[in-house]
Amino acid sequence: MLFEAEPIIPKDNVAPSGTQRVNFRELSVGAGANIFKANSEGIFVGADNFTDAPFKVDYEGNLSASSAIITGEIQGATIKNAAGDILIDSTGLNSSNNFSQSTIASTSTQTTGSSSYVNVPGGSMNPFTLTRSTVVLISIFLRGWNDNYVDTDGTEGSFSSNHSDFQLLDSVNGSLTNQAFTGIPYIRLDDDFFPDAVGVTDQIIAHTEPFLLSAGSHTLTLQFKSQDGNGTTVINAFVISRTILGI
Image (cartoon, rainbow, N blue to C red; front, side, top):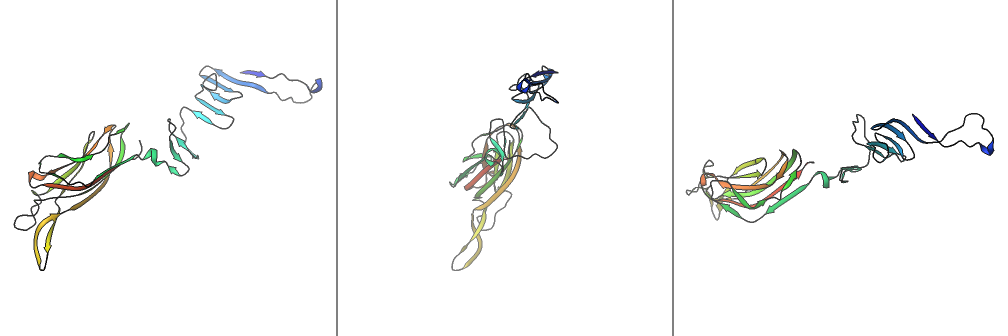
């Protein structure tokens, strides 16, 4: 143990009586990476100087440590990441850093007669990157139908061969969700009531689900098709949004 002390100067050159207080410039215990020091900058461990020490506390109570295991309560106003972005403040989670969100939408009518999935024009979202497996909340709103769902005799068609399908394809995890839709048969209301269906109109589909996506660069793309190539699949509006629930 090394003590480096200021010289003791008796008041008026008179030898002090009783206990004399000693002011140390520095207190040092150990050496190298196993050193503890206290000096005018603060207390620190693991380095010969305050700046390089992996653990240190200055005289204003600012603590710096390379890691910590805390079993009790933590009280604080602000928590930041290594880049200095505020993750938690006095009002709670900072959504601008934790919940990255993006939305695309279209009201243009899109059609296909393909029996295999094809991309819906305008239905691809901008790429986003996940550094680890992360839960992403995805919502889809869609309006569409299959024009073959109503048979030529004016009755409701067969669902098995006269419906359409859509799916949301992720470039990393593959198909996230898929669903069939037909449209809604309608009847003609005129001077008289005609009970037979004469056509189909929009069916509205809304779906929200959290997905655990793998690390990587992700692109979400809306696709559609006509079951067995029967009829024309029509999508005349869609909205897709995704929210990253922390990274």
